[in-house]
Length: 404
Image (cartoon, rainbow, N blue to C red):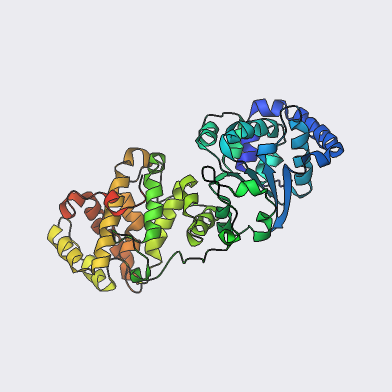
């Protein structure tokens, strides 16, 4: 078992109720694994090993024909016996169901899965739920048991089998192992079409020039629209302390960029890691060859005097149209974030300090530019603070098409 620090492992260790029964849980699991061996043929249609992909074992659970409560311990014992040999390497569970019974069947399964030791939660890479209805999604939020909390961190909802084509770990041959009924839509009984699992072409996530991006109807890069909409759709993200300043994990960054690269946009609905969303937005500006305020503007901005609003207005008007549009969006977004400064601690000054160098920078840095940094921050801060002076009645939602 992996002994490295792990949030889920730490949460289990801190849960007195779990630790008090840990020994019994492990003993029960071993008994169930042994009993399951006697009836291993019994669950052949419900537990479907799909081999390994990228070193991770993948197992389908066909919930619609899963056993009732009487045989559920053996059912989970069989599943545990399949996972156990590779538990150190990680594994992926895909729970498949159709119709309105998804909710009750999944509850029955999870009630028994809860008896497994912490390793079966810690080393679970993802728990995909196919055809999960609104009852499934809402049920997870009201569960306080530590095991269900741990599973919730790993859950990804998938609407249709064809959506698995967007996951780079999934192979076409693995889909053929699923019962035919899984390929039907929840409402519309669609027949399986092998063309549905052809891979989508990957899309580039970042570009070095603004004119290379695919724009939405409001003149904003689509990826920027998607990520910003997700950030604004969740008020708790805007209230996170240090948003745009706290660093994100590399794993979360790769996951977010992977969804965008594979055009797996539906997965963004469940992506609520604030630091990663903010880091993506910041990287959009950092990666540009030339910032929103052009290199030729840098010398003028470095001489900026406080409250020289005409200077700011004239400079903005001189920018290329695309730069102007994205700058308007940027200022509207930063102004919205600072409205939550009592909780997120990101004042206009703090936002300008973090993002100023992303919006205004010289072609090449010199020692003198270090001295100019305070002036650059003051310049950007002035635009955020006096947003209504430069952009009256402007709200960030006006630029977004994926906002709820």
